[in-house]
Length: 353
Image 1 (cartoon, one colour):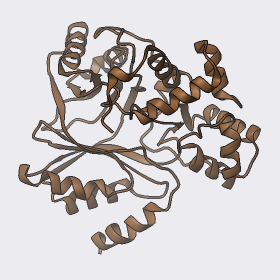
Image 2: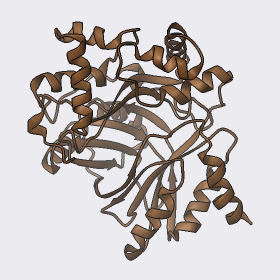
Image 3: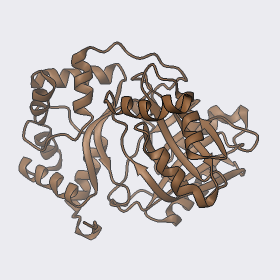
């Protein structure tokens, strides 16, 4: 169905903020939310079901840190002949580790994120996608330093374009180029497979997940707490549908920040409330931009206002604003699934041969 934001009530908006920012890891999480919002537990569950039906809320789940789980990942920019972009995007989107794939208004016109499981060579996968997609040039842009990762869409509409927020610890997890895979038991792998999916909309949802994992409710909550302490899980929270939530514009602001000011200006840019992602990435002869900021807004003007506020505060004038022209794929990376074997057998081995 086509979402109609006017159907959202104030109570829906308050609930959406609550589940994005601090979802309770409790045997009865919907009851805890009900106490916070001063409503009944059945009302919370009904409203969760309602915002899902409206297409605003995708799911409630554990949000794991890709690199902390031992997966290798990178943002990739590809330069493709304009009349071949759709075909190239189709090839790339079939990769199980490609979670985001967009056409943008730049000579590098196809942008995607790709992750591969422990033991896989990321370069092999990127090289295969480069050849199979027919890209003219492919630039790998892995995270060199993470200043912020944390999408929080203010559903009340009260956050100004130049508003600042504290960047919380889980929004700036450690990201090294090569992070060893953690030692995970079969039970922990099973828990990751289950808790990365949508939380059941029942009174005791973690007990329901425990039946799938093979442990009791307390065991599920203990595992989630352990994942959080080990920094394998960044948080347990809502995954929103940006466009359905009214955030129809997103822009990637890229900045040529002087080397000696990266540690100062990276965190400063991350501190803007409407910046959901802020990274330091590599530069190339034809790509001088070292800091990337993802900005979300209800419209293009909102994004432009935030970019203007960043420029005014930091004084960085050498920047570019890349808009998402077309969305080909936007999903969550699903960890420890068997999709990889099929893709590798069909694409990677054949391409290398």
